[in-house]
Image 1 (cartoon, rainbow, N blue to C red):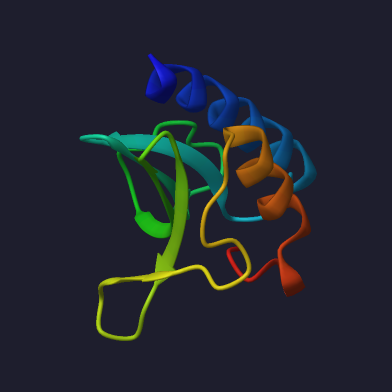
Image 2 (image 1 turned 45 degrees about the horizontal axis):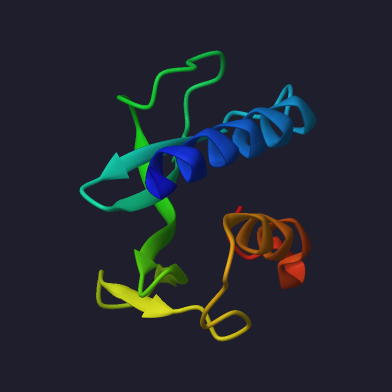
Length: 106
């Protein structure tokens, strides 16, 4: 249930971000991968689907009643996001993504 609620919140986050990226050749979308949610980048303008030209940006995992945030590492895996190792709510995760230093994710 918590993952479903988080997916809805992250979908809304992506929609808001996409409005600010009009004219750019990329969009954000949320994809569920088991119990994890991935924020992905499409590189084709005007393609709202998350099925083409995907680039993983952020992994959000539900664990121990809260959320862990990960970003891609240089080896192709996932490293813990140092600015927010754990959050009690998906809203806290979204606030962090909105304020991410230098918007490193996109």
